[in-house]
Structures are given as C-alpha cells and as structure tokens.
Image (cartoon, rainbow, N blue to C red; front, top):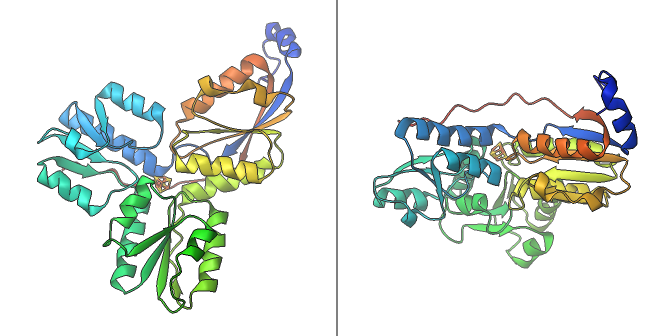
Amino acid sequence: MSGPGRGQLVAEAPAAQLLPRLRIILAAPRGFCAGVERAIAAVEAALRRFGAPVYVRRPIVHNRTVMRTLEAKGAVFVEELDEVPPGAIVLFSAHGVAPAVAEEAKERALIAYDAVCPLVAKVHREVVRHHRGGRHVLLIGHHGHPEVEGTTGQVPPGAVSVVQTLDQLRALGLPRALPVAYAVQTTYSVEDAAAIIALMRALFDDVQAPATGDICYATTNRQAALRAIAGQADAIIVVGASFSSNANRLADIAREAGCGSVQLIEDGAELDWAMLAGAETLGITSAASTPESCVAEILELLEGRFDLELSEHRETDEAIMFKQLRLD
Ligand code: SF4
C-alpha cells in the first residue's frame, strides 16, 4: 500500500511494483452512527445484566455481521413475539415499533426494552402531534420497512399514507384542501425526499413540515460524503447489507452520480473482482449499520491484488452520541 510508510520495507517493494495501481478514496463519515452504537450497546448491556438468552425482535440493526457477533454472545433474534418464552427479556430494534408491539409484549408477560433510535422516536412524536392536530400524514418512506411500519403504527389505521414515489403521491387522489403534514423515513435519500416534498407543496394548499428535518444527520452526512467522491471514482463499493435501507440509498446515489460499477456488498466474500477490472480510482463507503471491520477486511483483500494509494475524503465531523438505554 502506498502513502504514509511506503518504501519503509525494502523487501516488499518489488512485489508491489508488479501489482496494478489502485487509488482508493474512503468516504467519511461512514459506518456506525450513534443510534446503531446505542442499540448494539443495549443488547450487550442486557446480556451482561440478565445473562443469555436475551431475545431481540427483528434485526437489532440491519447487518448480519453485527447480528452474528451478538448471537455468539447469547442474543436470539426472532421475527415475532410469539417466539419468545413468557418472562423472557426482549429488546426492540433501533428501527422502532408500533405501540401495539409493546402492548403485545406486556400481554405475553415479557420484560421488554425499546432500543429505538432517539431520532426515529422524534419522528414518532411528530406524527402523533400532526394526527392530533387534525392533519393527514404523508410519510415518505419504503413500504414494508420496519421503521415505516413502526411510524405508521403510532396512529390509527388510515391516518398515514406512505409514499415512496411521485406517482404514488399523485395516485392517492387526496383533495387539495386537505390539511396534510409530512414525515420522512430517517434513512431516505435526501434528494428523492426533496422531489416528493416539492410535489406535495404543489398538490396541497396546507402542508406542514417537520420542526426539524427527519432524515437523520448520519444519513445526510454519509450521502453527502459519497456524492463528493462519486464523480472521481471509476468504481464504488458500498459496504452494507442488501436489506439495509441506508446502504441501498448509498448505492442508488453512486449510480445516480453516473458510476458504472457499483457494488453493494456486506463483506469481502461478496467482492466481485470483475467489477474492478480497469478501474483506476475506487470509492468506498459503508452504511450506518456496518462495522468498520468489514471495510478493513475488504481493504486487506484489495491490498493482495493492487498497489493501493489510500486517501480519505472527510465531508464533516460527527460528534453526536446518545445516552445509553436504561435497563431498570
Ligand atoms: S441511521 Fe439515523 S435514525 Fe437510523 S439509527 Fe442511525 S442515527 Fe438513528
């Protein structure tokens, strides 16, 4: 690998010269956000305090490496609460749940803790406030995503319409005079949301926006950092799970930026070498639920085949931390 320290090991130099050069730009910020760190810490703290097994409803965060690591420590992931024995400890994921899920946990005599990200909980509160204020809520988000299910479940059925595209918004056929408010899935594409909000303003006379933006700081920063490097890259690797919303949005952004070779991979085993053929500059980023160890593993594999020139583009610094979940 070139850059700092290059040439210090004389014995390595001839081998490196035989390898094709590859310039790598790492996007920053990338990887874990404060909400993901808090949710993982909550499972670990529950395991320490109560011992294994600790049940977790749905993936605590959308990343298999994280889930496998927690499983090895004694976490048991389930889809629904009827898989959890009465009296057991159960945690809800960072994506949030509808109040009906918490109710069900009570009925089943489970000891439940909610590891919802505080920024998702903020969206929940807003949606409830808008509904109580007599507004129909338009939630910009992906149908079926757990965060969207949890947000929709905060209010009675029919109080929220989920819209994912401009066409879906038009197809709702709601009257222009209906007072509406919008909310946005925290991991949505900043640009796609802006286009849908612009159409809302054209279709309705009275549109209320969230007090502050719903798309969270981590999503915004990771998308901006990737946009900043995408134009310079012949190929881009987004390290993240195929079922992670924010990982998929990063891959979309790379494609929209015109990059013809975009891989969304969870770890080195999924690396498609053919997609790097002829690339001189490779951009790498990772989703908010991806541990940095997955990026490090991919860099190590690349180092075996290329003479790497490594740099990092830092778009902004992040200092946000959330209080740990209390397990009283
Ligand atoms: S991506 Fe944003 S909303 Fe989701 S857990 Fe991280 S900080 Fe919270």
